[in-house]
Image (cartoon, rainbow, N blue to C red; front, side):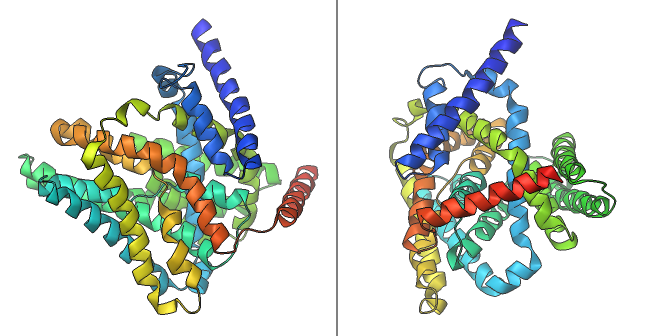
Length: 412
Protein backbone atom coordinates (compact mmCIF):
# COMPACT_ATOMS: atom_id res chain seq x y z
CA UNK A 1 0.00 0.00 0.00
CA UNK A 2 2.81 2.38 0.89
CA UNK A 3 4.46 1.80 -2.49
CA UNK A 4 1.26 2.64 -4.38
CA UNK A 5 0.75 5.78 -2.32
CA UNK A 6 4.32 6.88 -3.05
CA UNK A 7 3.78 6.34 -6.77
CA UNK A 8 0.54 8.31 -6.74
CA UNK A 9 2.15 11.07 -4.68
CA UNK A 10 5.04 11.35 -7.14
CA UNK A 11 2.68 11.37 -10.12
CA UNK A 12 0.59 14.13 -8.55
CA UNK A 13 3.71 16.11 -7.63
CA UNK A 14 5.07 15.64 -11.15
CA UNK A 15 1.90 17.08 -12.71
CA UNK A 16 1.65 20.05 -10.31
CA UNK A 17 5.35 20.92 -10.31
CA UNK A 18 5.48 20.40 -14.07
CA UNK A 19 2.56 22.81 -14.49
CA UNK A 20 4.36 25.43 -12.39
CA UNK A 21 7.60 24.84 -14.31
CA UNK A 22 5.75 25.28 -17.59
CA UNK A 23 4.20 28.55 -16.44
CA UNK A 24 7.58 29.87 -15.30
CA UNK A 25 9.20 28.84 -18.59
CA UNK A 26 6.48 30.59 -20.57
CA UNK A 27 7.01 33.80 -18.59
CA UNK A 28 10.70 33.87 -19.50
CA UNK A 29 9.86 33.30 -23.18
CA UNK A 30 10.85 29.65 -23.51
CA UNK A 31 8.44 26.81 -24.39
CA UNK A 32 6.48 25.22 -21.57
CA UNK A 33 7.69 21.77 -22.60
CA UNK A 34 11.25 22.81 -21.69
CA UNK A 35 9.97 23.70 -18.23
CA UNK A 36 8.34 20.27 -17.88
CA UNK A 37 11.60 18.56 -18.88
CA UNK A 38 13.73 20.63 -16.51
CA UNK A 39 11.36 19.90 -13.61
CA UNK A 40 11.68 16.21 -14.44
CA UNK A 41 15.46 16.53 -14.52
CA UNK A 42 15.31 18.21 -11.09
CA UNK A 43 13.12 15.43 -9.65
CA UNK A 44 15.00 12.56 -11.32
CA UNK A 45 17.95 10.39 -10.25
CA UNK A 46 20.46 12.86 -11.71
CA UNK A 47 19.37 15.46 -9.13
CA UNK A 48 17.08 15.00 -6.09
CA UNK A 49 16.10 11.39 -6.80
CA UNK A 50 12.46 12.04 -5.88
CA UNK A 51 11.44 10.11 -9.03
CA UNK A 52 13.42 6.87 -9.27
CA UNK A 53 14.00 4.69 -12.29
CA UNK A 54 11.70 1.99 -10.91
CA UNK A 55 8.89 4.52 -10.47
CA UNK A 56 9.26 5.66 -14.09
CA UNK A 57 9.08 2.02 -15.16
CA UNK A 58 5.98 1.34 -13.04
CA UNK A 59 4.31 4.46 -14.41
CA UNK A 60 5.20 3.44 -17.97
CA UNK A 61 1.52 3.20 -18.89
CA UNK A 62 1.35 7.01 -18.61
CA UNK A 63 4.12 7.30 -21.21
CA UNK A 64 2.43 4.74 -23.48
CA UNK A 65 -0.93 6.53 -23.40
CA UNK A 66 0.56 10.01 -23.84
CA UNK A 67 2.80 8.89 -26.71
CA UNK A 68 -0.17 7.16 -28.36
CA UNK A 69 -2.18 10.39 -28.17
CA UNK A 70 0.73 12.40 -29.57
CA UNK A 71 1.34 10.06 -32.51
CA UNK A 72 -2.40 9.89 -33.21
CA UNK A 73 -2.44 13.71 -33.42
CA UNK A 74 0.71 13.73 -35.60
CA UNK A 75 -1.04 11.30 -37.96
CA UNK A 76 -3.65 13.98 -38.55
CA UNK A 77 -1.00 15.90 -40.50
CA UNK A 78 -1.37 13.30 -43.26
CA UNK A 79 -4.81 14.58 -44.19
CA UNK A 80 -4.89 14.36 -47.99
CA UNK A 81 -6.36 17.82 -48.55
CA UNK A 82 -3.70 19.34 -46.28
CA UNK A 83 -0.88 17.49 -48.08
CA UNK A 84 -2.16 18.62 -51.48
CA UNK A 85 -2.30 22.22 -50.29
CA UNK A 86 1.26 22.05 -48.97
CA UNK A 87 2.46 20.15 -52.03
CA UNK A 88 3.25 16.46 -51.73
CA UNK A 89 6.23 16.53 -54.09
CA UNK A 90 7.77 19.54 -52.35
CA UNK A 91 7.17 17.98 -48.93
CA UNK A 92 8.79 14.69 -49.96
CA UNK A 93 11.71 16.61 -51.44
CA UNK A 94 12.27 18.30 -48.07
CA UNK A 95 11.93 14.98 -46.23
CA UNK A 96 14.33 13.13 -48.53
CA UNK A 97 17.00 15.83 -48.44
CA UNK A 98 17.00 16.36 -44.67
CA UNK A 99 16.81 12.66 -43.78
CA UNK A 100 19.59 11.79 -46.23
CA UNK A 101 21.55 14.76 -44.89
CA UNK A 102 21.33 13.55 -41.28
CA UNK A 103 21.99 9.91 -42.25
CA UNK A 104 24.98 10.64 -44.48
CA UNK A 105 26.69 13.29 -42.34
CA UNK A 106 26.33 11.33 -39.07
CA UNK A 107 27.08 7.94 -40.64
CA UNK A 108 30.00 9.35 -42.62
CA UNK A 109 31.37 11.01 -39.50
CA UNK A 110 31.46 7.69 -37.65
CA UNK A 111 33.13 5.98 -40.62
CA UNK A 112 35.85 8.65 -40.51
CA UNK A 113 36.28 7.92 -36.79
CA UNK A 114 37.04 4.32 -37.68
CA UNK A 115 33.73 2.67 -36.74
CA UNK A 116 32.37 -0.15 -38.87
CA UNK A 117 29.67 0.32 -41.50
CA UNK A 118 26.89 -1.30 -39.42
CA UNK A 119 27.40 1.06 -36.47
CA UNK A 120 27.64 4.07 -38.80
CA UNK A 121 24.32 3.12 -40.43
CA UNK A 122 22.62 2.61 -37.06
CA UNK A 123 23.85 6.00 -35.81
CA UNK A 124 22.70 7.62 -39.06
CA UNK A 125 19.29 5.99 -38.72
CA UNK A 126 18.86 7.21 -35.14
CA UNK A 127 19.86 10.72 -36.29
CA UNK A 128 16.96 10.79 -38.77
CA UNK A 129 14.31 10.56 -36.01
CA UNK A 130 12.69 13.73 -34.66
CA UNK A 131 10.76 13.92 -31.37
CA UNK A 132 7.09 14.46 -32.26
CA UNK A 133 5.90 15.26 -28.75
CA UNK A 134 8.03 18.32 -27.97
CA UNK A 135 7.55 19.73 -31.47
CA UNK A 136 3.77 19.31 -31.37
CA UNK A 137 3.45 20.99 -27.97
CA UNK A 138 5.47 24.04 -29.03
CA UNK A 139 3.31 24.48 -32.14
CA UNK A 140 0.15 24.24 -30.01
CA UNK A 141 1.43 26.49 -27.25
CA UNK A 142 2.15 29.38 -29.62
CA UNK A 143 -0.77 28.74 -32.02
CA UNK A 144 1.61 29.02 -34.96
CA UNK A 145 0.38 29.12 -38.53
CA UNK A 146 2.01 29.59 -41.91
CA UNK A 147 4.05 27.75 -44.58
CA UNK A 148 6.72 26.52 -42.14
CA UNK A 149 4.18 25.21 -39.62
CA UNK A 150 2.25 23.48 -42.41
CA UNK A 151 5.34 21.45 -43.29
CA UNK A 152 6.90 20.97 -39.85
CA UNK A 153 4.59 18.40 -38.27
CA UNK A 154 4.23 16.43 -41.49
CA UNK A 155 8.02 16.26 -41.75
CA UNK A 156 8.28 15.07 -38.15
CA UNK A 157 5.91 12.21 -38.95
CA UNK A 158 7.81 11.32 -42.14
CA UNK A 159 11.15 11.44 -40.27
CA UNK A 160 9.98 8.84 -37.78
CA UNK A 161 8.42 6.63 -40.46
CA UNK A 162 11.73 6.62 -42.36
CA UNK A 163 13.77 6.02 -39.18
CA UNK A 164 11.59 3.08 -38.13
CA UNK A 165 11.67 1.57 -41.63
CA UNK A 166 15.44 1.97 -42.01
CA UNK A 167 16.08 0.48 -38.58
CA UNK A 168 13.94 -2.58 -39.30
CA UNK A 169 15.86 -3.11 -42.55
CA UNK A 170 19.30 -2.74 -40.93
CA UNK A 171 18.30 -4.96 -38.00
CA UNK A 172 17.17 -7.63 -40.47
CA UNK A 173 20.60 -7.50 -42.14
CA UNK A 174 22.31 -7.72 -38.74
CA UNK A 175 20.22 -10.76 -37.82
CA UNK A 176 21.20 -12.32 -41.14
CA UNK A 177 24.90 -11.76 -40.41
CA UNK A 178 24.42 -13.21 -36.90
CA UNK A 179 23.39 -16.53 -38.42
CA UNK A 180 19.62 -16.33 -38.01
CA UNK A 181 17.66 -18.17 -40.69
CA UNK A 182 17.46 -15.88 -43.75
CA UNK A 183 13.68 -16.12 -44.14
CA UNK A 184 13.12 -15.17 -40.48
CA UNK A 185 15.72 -12.39 -40.51
CA UNK A 186 14.33 -10.73 -43.63
CA UNK A 187 10.61 -11.32 -43.09
CA UNK A 188 10.48 -10.09 -39.48
CA UNK A 189 10.94 -6.38 -40.33
CA UNK A 190 8.45 -6.73 -43.19
CA UNK A 191 5.93 -8.30 -40.79
CA UNK A 192 6.41 -5.52 -38.23
CA UNK A 193 5.92 -2.73 -40.75
CA UNK A 194 3.08 -4.23 -42.79
CA UNK A 195 1.05 -5.49 -39.82
CA UNK A 196 1.56 -2.22 -37.89
CA UNK A 197 0.21 -0.24 -40.85
CA UNK A 198 -2.69 -2.66 -41.36
CA UNK A 199 -3.64 -2.60 -37.66
CA UNK A 200 -3.51 1.21 -37.53
CA UNK A 201 -5.68 1.42 -40.65
CA UNK A 202 -8.28 -1.00 -39.26
CA UNK A 203 -8.48 0.84 -35.92
CA UNK A 204 -8.79 4.21 -37.69
CA UNK A 205 -11.62 2.86 -39.87
CA UNK A 206 -13.32 1.44 -36.76
CA UNK A 207 -13.28 4.87 -35.13
CA UNK A 208 -14.61 6.48 -38.33
CA UNK A 209 -17.49 3.98 -38.49
CA UNK A 210 -18.30 4.29 -34.77
CA UNK A 211 -18.50 8.08 -34.92
CA UNK A 212 -21.68 7.89 -37.03
CA UNK A 213 -23.41 6.03 -34.20
CA UNK A 214 -22.45 8.11 -31.17
CA UNK A 215 -25.15 9.58 -28.94
CA UNK A 216 -23.13 12.43 -27.37
CA UNK A 217 -19.72 14.10 -27.67
CA UNK A 218 -18.37 12.49 -24.49
CA UNK A 219 -18.79 9.11 -26.18
CA UNK A 220 -16.58 10.31 -29.05
CA UNK A 221 -13.76 11.02 -26.59
CA UNK A 222 -14.16 7.62 -24.93
CA UNK A 223 -14.06 5.80 -28.27
CA UNK A 224 -10.96 7.74 -29.35
CA UNK A 225 -9.09 6.93 -26.14
CA UNK A 226 -10.22 3.32 -26.32
CA UNK A 227 -8.95 2.97 -29.90
CA UNK A 228 -5.56 4.48 -29.00
CA UNK A 229 -5.19 2.21 -25.96
CA UNK A 230 -6.26 -0.82 -27.98
CA UNK A 231 -3.75 -0.02 -30.72
CA UNK A 232 -0.89 0.54 -28.26
CA UNK A 233 -1.68 -2.66 -26.37
CA UNK A 234 -2.02 -4.80 -29.49
CA UNK A 235 1.18 -3.31 -30.90
CA UNK A 236 3.10 -4.38 -27.80
CA UNK A 237 1.41 -7.79 -27.66
CA UNK A 238 2.10 -8.61 -31.32
CA UNK A 239 5.68 -7.20 -31.25
CA UNK A 240 4.78 -4.40 -33.64
CA UNK A 241 5.54 -0.67 -33.53
CA UNK A 242 2.88 0.97 -31.27
CA UNK A 243 4.04 4.38 -32.50
CA UNK A 244 3.42 3.43 -36.12
CA UNK A 245 0.04 1.91 -35.26
CA UNK A 246 -1.11 5.14 -33.55
CA UNK A 247 0.21 7.35 -36.35
CA UNK A 248 -1.49 5.33 -39.10
CA UNK A 249 -4.74 5.28 -37.10
CA UNK A 250 -4.62 9.08 -36.85
CA UNK A 251 -3.91 9.43 -40.58
CA UNK A 252 -6.78 7.06 -41.42
CA UNK A 253 -9.22 9.03 -39.25
CA UNK A 254 -8.05 12.31 -40.80
CA UNK A 255 -8.93 11.01 -44.28
CA UNK A 256 -12.06 8.97 -43.61
CA UNK A 257 -13.88 10.69 -40.75
CA UNK A 258 -16.34 13.56 -41.17
CA UNK A 259 -15.80 14.55 -37.55
CA UNK A 260 -12.03 14.16 -37.38
CA UNK A 261 -11.40 17.79 -36.40
CA UNK A 262 -13.95 17.45 -33.60
CA UNK A 263 -12.19 14.25 -32.49
CA UNK A 264 -8.95 16.18 -31.98
CA UNK A 265 -10.77 18.99 -30.13
CA UNK A 266 -12.30 16.41 -27.77
CA UNK A 267 -8.94 14.67 -27.36
CA UNK A 268 -7.24 17.88 -26.25
CA UNK A 269 -9.61 18.16 -23.27
CA UNK A 270 -7.93 15.09 -21.77
CA UNK A 271 -4.35 15.30 -22.89
CA UNK A 272 -2.73 18.16 -20.92
CA UNK A 273 -2.20 16.35 -17.58
CA UNK A 274 -0.97 13.29 -19.45
CA UNK A 275 1.45 15.36 -21.52
CA UNK A 276 2.81 17.15 -18.45
CA UNK A 277 3.33 13.82 -16.67
CA UNK A 278 4.90 12.39 -19.84
CA UNK A 279 7.49 15.15 -20.15
CA UNK A 280 8.28 15.33 -16.44
CA UNK A 281 8.86 11.57 -16.42
CA UNK A 282 10.89 11.90 -19.63
CA UNK A 283 12.94 14.66 -18.02
CA UNK A 284 13.61 12.45 -15.01
CA UNK A 285 15.24 9.87 -17.30
CA UNK A 286 17.69 12.40 -18.77
CA UNK A 287 21.07 11.32 -17.49
CA UNK A 288 23.59 14.05 -16.82
CA UNK A 289 26.15 11.42 -15.82
CA UNK A 290 26.54 10.27 -19.45
CA UNK A 291 27.44 13.75 -20.71
CA UNK A 292 31.14 13.41 -19.77
CA UNK A 293 31.18 10.07 -21.61
CA UNK A 294 29.96 11.66 -24.84
CA UNK A 295 33.42 12.41 -26.18
CA UNK A 296 34.21 12.83 -29.88
CA UNK A 297 31.53 10.31 -30.91
CA UNK A 298 28.80 12.31 -29.18
CA UNK A 299 29.98 15.57 -30.73
CA UNK A 300 30.03 13.98 -34.20
CA UNK A 301 26.46 12.75 -33.66
CA UNK A 302 25.20 16.04 -32.19
CA UNK A 303 26.71 18.42 -34.74
CA UNK A 304 26.52 16.00 -37.67
CA UNK A 305 22.77 15.61 -37.13
CA UNK A 306 22.33 19.38 -36.82
CA UNK A 307 24.31 20.18 -39.98
CA UNK A 308 22.70 17.31 -41.90
CA UNK A 309 19.13 18.41 -41.19
CA UNK A 310 19.69 22.16 -41.54
CA UNK A 311 21.82 21.71 -44.66
CA UNK A 312 19.39 19.21 -46.19
CA UNK A 313 16.45 21.58 -45.74
CA UNK A 314 18.48 24.48 -47.12
CA UNK A 315 19.37 22.52 -50.25
CA UNK A 316 15.81 21.22 -50.73
CA UNK A 317 14.34 24.69 -50.27
CA UNK A 318 16.24 26.30 -53.13
CA UNK A 319 13.38 25.80 -55.59
CA UNK A 320 10.92 27.97 -53.69
CA UNK A 321 13.31 30.20 -51.76
CA UNK A 322 11.86 33.32 -53.35
CA UNK A 323 8.29 32.39 -52.46
CA UNK A 324 8.90 30.93 -48.97
CA UNK A 325 12.42 31.97 -47.83
CA UNK A 326 11.62 31.09 -44.21
CA UNK A 327 11.36 27.39 -45.09
CA UNK A 328 14.91 27.00 -46.35
CA UNK A 329 16.30 29.37 -43.70
CA UNK A 330 14.55 28.23 -40.52
CA UNK A 331 12.77 24.88 -41.00
CA UNK A 332 15.95 22.87 -40.36
CA UNK A 333 16.43 24.19 -36.83
CA UNK A 334 12.88 23.18 -35.91
CA UNK A 335 13.66 19.50 -36.61
CA UNK A 336 16.32 19.00 -33.93
CA UNK A 337 14.21 17.75 -30.99
CA UNK A 338 15.00 14.12 -30.30
CA UNK A 339 13.97 11.56 -27.71
CA UNK A 340 11.72 8.48 -27.85
CA UNK A 341 12.32 6.94 -31.28
CA UNK A 342 16.12 7.34 -31.18
CA UNK A 343 16.29 6.01 -27.61
CA UNK A 344 14.05 3.09 -28.56
CA UNK A 345 16.33 2.22 -31.49
CA UNK A 346 19.43 2.38 -29.27
CA UNK A 347 17.93 0.18 -26.54
CA UNK A 348 16.64 -2.37 -29.03
CA UNK A 349 20.11 -2.66 -30.57
CA UNK A 350 21.62 -2.97 -27.07
CA UNK A 351 19.24 -5.80 -26.16
CA UNK A 352 20.04 -7.79 -29.33
CA UNK A 353 23.66 -6.79 -30.03
CA UNK A 354 25.15 -5.56 -26.70
CA UNK A 355 28.59 -4.56 -27.98
CA UNK A 356 27.26 -2.32 -30.74
CA UNK A 357 24.31 -1.12 -28.67
CA UNK A 358 26.36 0.04 -25.65
CA UNK A 359 28.18 2.80 -27.54
CA UNK A 360 25.06 3.77 -29.53
CA UNK A 361 23.03 4.04 -26.30
CA UNK A 362 25.68 6.21 -24.64
CA UNK A 363 25.87 8.55 -27.64
CA UNK A 364 22.08 8.86 -28.03
CA UNK A 365 21.38 9.36 -24.30
CA UNK A 366 24.09 11.99 -23.97
CA UNK A 367 22.93 13.98 -26.99
CA UNK A 368 19.23 13.65 -26.09
CA UNK A 369 19.97 15.74 -22.97
CA UNK A 370 21.02 18.57 -25.31
CA UNK A 371 18.53 18.00 -28.13
CA UNK A 372 15.47 17.61 -25.94
CA UNK A 373 16.16 20.61 -23.71
CA UNK A 374 17.46 23.02 -26.38
CA UNK A 375 15.31 21.60 -29.20
CA UNK A 376 11.95 23.12 -28.14
CA UNK A 377 13.59 26.54 -27.82
CA UNK A 378 14.96 26.17 -31.37
CA UNK A 379 11.48 25.17 -32.61
CA UNK A 380 10.09 28.35 -31.09
CA UNK A 381 12.99 30.43 -32.44
CA UNK A 382 12.58 29.10 -35.98
CA UNK A 383 8.83 29.71 -35.97
CA UNK A 384 9.36 33.18 -34.52
CA UNK A 385 11.99 34.11 -37.13
CA UNK A 386 9.61 32.86 -39.81
CA UNK A 387 6.96 35.25 -38.48
CA UNK A 388 4.47 32.48 -37.72
CA UNK A 389 3.95 33.11 -33.98
CA UNK A 390 1.02 35.46 -33.32
CA UNK A 391 1.40 38.40 -30.97
CA UNK A 392 0.69 37.97 -27.24
CA UNK A 393 -2.73 39.61 -27.62
CA UNK A 394 -3.62 37.30 -30.52
CA UNK A 395 -2.49 34.23 -28.54
CA UNK A 396 -4.65 35.28 -25.56
CA UNK A 397 -7.57 35.80 -27.93
CA UNK A 398 -7.08 32.36 -29.49
CA UNK A 399 -6.80 30.74 -26.05
CA UNK A 400 -10.00 32.50 -25.03
CA UNK A 401 -11.78 31.15 -28.12
CA UNK A 402 -10.52 27.63 -27.32
CA UNK A 403 -11.74 27.89 -23.73
CA UNK A 404 -15.13 29.16 -24.92
CA UNK A 405 -15.37 26.33 -27.43
CA UNK A 406 -14.51 23.78 -24.75
CA UNK A 407 -17.12 25.22 -22.41
CA UNK A 408 -19.79 25.04 -25.13
CA UNK A 409 -18.79 21.45 -25.86
CA UNK A 410 -19.07 20.53 -22.18
CA UNK A 411 -22.41 22.21 -21.96
CA UNK A 412 -23.82 20.21 -24.86
